[in-house]
Length: 226
Ligand SMILES: [Zn+2]
Image (cartoon, rainbow, N blue to C red; front, side, top):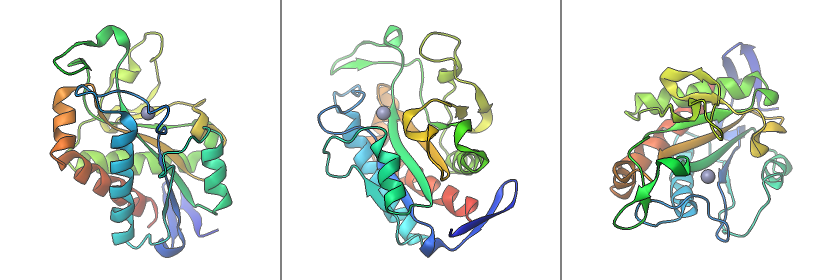
């Protein structure tokens, strides 16, 4: 095992041996949410996952790899299985967010919202303390890189109502989330931005948001992996 628990939030590891599996959320035939400008979530997930891989490599996490880069269909349960098969040390699933249908309205190019914006980080408490430590480290860096957490998943309505573990860094518990709940390695899911929000999407198109999110995720892994 290329890492060891030192205390509650501090793990020791060697970056070159610490393999981060970067999971590209969804796939081409079921591409997730659709943005305000009618772009599929999968496209944004792939772009950010690739940028995150480069950011991790530049911090010495040279053996990290992508899952789902080809766009072929992969089941939710086989994503962590692929990570385990390749001896990953951590699992980071990359997604982009939307809101409940009641908060969407017709815009010039697609369905859009101004109800929510910003990022969220999810962990399953079933996957252990290390997942929460990694989620905290990434959430802190997202804020440090100027990104704002979205709190809309905590709204007490059907489909949301997620417990906030730390509202200042957008960290939620989502214990039953299929890609997280059965992992034995630290696992988090990052919703980088709300792509039905035209302002968030514009910051993705201008590259600023993805540059910052990729740097923040890599910095979070590095902070976890001191
Ligand atoms: Zn998604």
